[in-house]
Image (cartoon, rainbow, N blue to C red; front, side, top):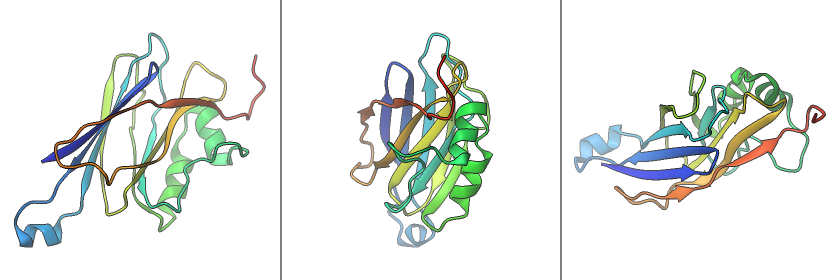
Length: 167
């Protein structure tokens, strides 16, 4: 069974499903919670570079509002390269799982990833291609309150990384 979160705004929509454990005690011991994250681009003409999606604990921040962008976030926001953010997330014990959407997300298209782990916060970030340093993201969304089969809608925000002058 899956629990679902549907996150959306005029810019991006994200749906997140959380698979519950089986009723079997043996299977429960071997099964970690699984989260299916699907991102749908609802824009009329704004492609999104491959996003990073992370399942983590409360001590991890993919990015922090009001602070200078990290070099890894700058690389994502300016050039669409999420590899530095992925490597940094994978290098910390505060992150259970991290995935890349792996492809450009064109308007109207959807892509999905599966995350697995015990942590209960979800973050994501992806470059808005037709900007000089804009990105969309979700910061530390707590998912443990969802029941199996439940769905929820959220709005995603867009950000200026502040690493280039706007023109």
